[in-house]
Amino acid sequence: MLSNKFSDKALRAFNSIRRDMRSDFDAVIEALEEEEAVLARKNRTCKDEITLRWQQGAQQALLELVEAMQNAGYVLRKELNNEQDRERYAGTRGSAIG
Image: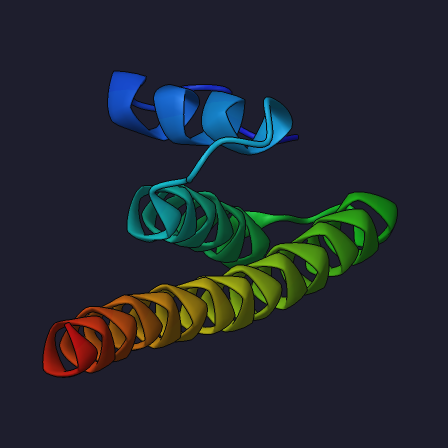
């Protein structure tokens, strides 16, 4: 029951994850949060209990994905910063010796 109306930016971000490329985690998170908001709106007007339960489960799954993406983005940004620090340190150390 997802809307399937992701923006081009979100689709590119999803595709980058699929291809193991550096991803735009903010775009993915934004798209997932938009889908979660759509489900929340549907839940407020849903009369069928089975559909409501399914949508609530989907909403929970999206929230868990958002949290996982936020954590993955944080870890990758931290590793990138560490890599840059190591390169700076190696460059400084090499220039001091030479």
